[in-house]
Image (cartoon, rainbow, N blue to C red):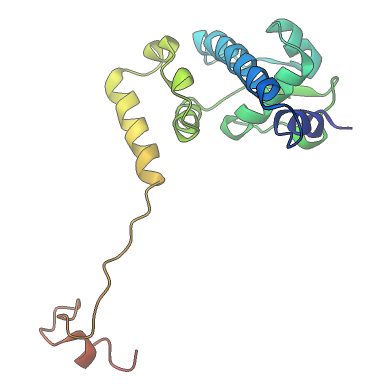
Length: 168
């Protein structure tokens, strides 16, 4: 069975004890934070190796590394083959800095986008700008509803029903 399926079955189990799942995620988030802190210290270095080698490098088990690879995949310059990944699959961690920051914001992972290592990558103004861009991209903007007796938005001065709304 591919590692990703095994990870997802374990981490998102419907039948697992809630306490066990909470402990699994708490432990995962601690490890994830440590890995990101190390990666962000040298953000331009492309870390590569097999899943097993990276798990050993960052002192985590294979399943934790699988979850990490699943989480970072959308932020990588070159995506990893996570769906069919096994322990000996070669993977890379070359990430797009702005995209990674925005994805952390999108995930609501404040323990990650507030890591102090980001201070050496982006100044505070840039971090605020990236944060705002990400939040704005998730906001749904609805156009105001135009009613038949409203002035037509085309600027003709006529009522909408007598102008652009004719036959609508």
